[in-house]
Length: 174
Image (cartoon, rainbow, N blue to C red; front, side, top):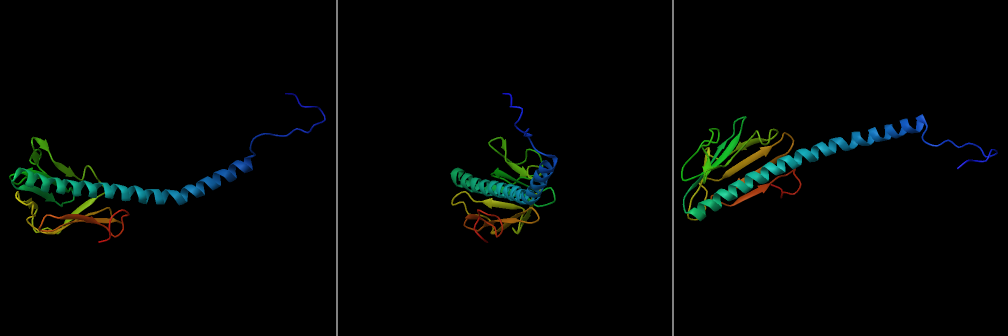
């Protein structure tokens, strides 16, 4: 549509100053949000590995009672940590195909969660769930940490397993 000649011209769009101001506000907003997002991402990763370890321990206990035989959980807490599960005899999670159940490898290691570190207060590298009642061979704590946050998986002699953390949302405090 044509404008009449006596009407003043109105520019459309943004001035350079308005564009720079918008970019400044956007960069300030991102600098505030990004660190919070990073912490949330690290927390979610640690919660994921903690939930996986908890689930695998519960699975090992359930397999022991289901099969009526001992199930071994080998826990290696070196810098290349790992854990593996095997029915009937001990295994070494750092050796390929050593920890299997029904010809399926049951191993989790640091390669799956590179920022997590696993520590153990168990007296042995092998935790054994006995086959009748699913009782554990020892009580202790497995700790998973990413440097700023820690989750603990507590195992008692009756085989009861629980997860807690003082600084990861969604877990009860330890």
